[in-house]
Image 1 (cartoon, rainbow, N blue to C red):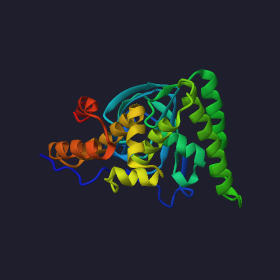
Image 2 (cartoon, one colour; image 1 turned 60 degrees about the vertical axis):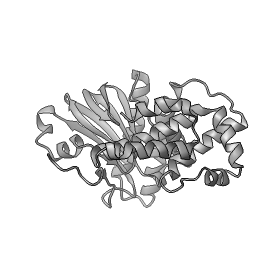
Image 3 (cartoon, rainbow, N blue to C red; image 1 turned 180 degrees about the vertical axis):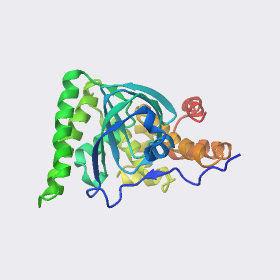
Image 4 (cartoon, rainbow, N blue to C red; image 1 turned 30 degrees about the vertical axis):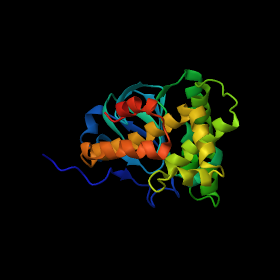
Length: 281
């Protein structure tokens, strides 16, 4: 049996890209795909270093994202967070517009929104919305090719942020109207966001409370008030572990330790254990 790789491959954004921004329009014929260099990269489960936005203009594609298969027909948006593992399974002749952006090039508000919204399922587009996106995409693509301008990087960065803002607004339009949260609900949400960033290094609930400037007891009470945020966070952390153990390490070795770790770190009640066990399969 083939030995698993030590880590999940990451498509890095090296010096050939404009300081962490890559934008392109790609045509791929189905007959040529397996013979191209792109096949080895796209068909192997991997992550991308930046936030990636793919707008399928023509054709269809079957893609696997975090163990879920999606059949995507044009026109559609596919967004992938840097933590998401994905690969292409099959497709018809396609035309796809792609944008990859590192965190440091994103508007802070947009970056926070993407962190909060992820993971996002692929989204079909109406003709009107897709026309607006392609129009701005074309402008960004043209700016990327005009590299003689002294302000080339800044102009490209700002135009790409306009595109990202439009894409985020399209995803937000599909969600329910936001509800005003209480203080405890806001703390529960802040705990979730902090947990997702620091769970590999911070194991004590008291340390999370300290970082949030509240007592451990108040943190515990806040999480009980709004456990939906907490379970969403747990699901994403478990998914991250599943990605690594499925592609690198035998999963049975980590299931028991992961379960006990989540119980300690996230202050969850026993009512969530059946749901958590489902995530591990």
